[in-house]
Image 1 (cartoon, rainbow, N blue to C red):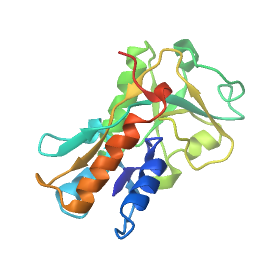
Image 2 (tube, rainbow, N blue to C red):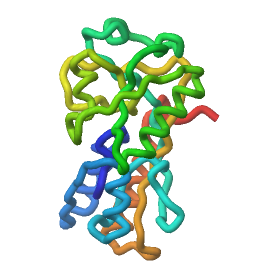
Image 3 (cartoon, rainbow, N blue to C red):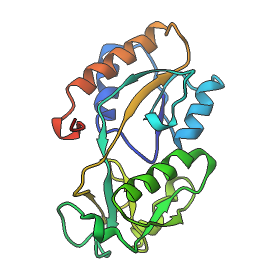
Length: 206
């Protein structure tokens, strides 16, 4: 199972726990990476299934849509946007350096960050983050901010604040085979059930 390392889906832990209870004989190996890397590995047969934003999907992959996640602003406690809680207004983002991957396999994320900020009327100053787990290092250092989804990255002293103008990221479980095997079929069914019972606050407003 590949899971996007930049934009997390909040109920992922609940999904894995529920699947472990329902299919205890199945071993699950979780691989975390950029969405583009995961989808390429899925196409090449190195992964069985990927949980990632739909922006990384393609027409030849099968998918089941999951509950969406809201974009949040990540900022260090030492940063002006991390000093207080509550929603972040669009004008507060003006002039801030915003972290992106700057990598081919993170291109869809980078584009989504740019488009989300542009839709809010913000002219972003994009800054390439560190490789892999160090992507949000400049955020932890208080030098920049980032947009991600609800789960916070693995850094201390980073706060996650919602956008005042709520924007959402669509998530899906994606696989390649037209007829999934029994284990994958069970995972798909479990993911659908978990998504249906995810907190209403994570669902997009029509």
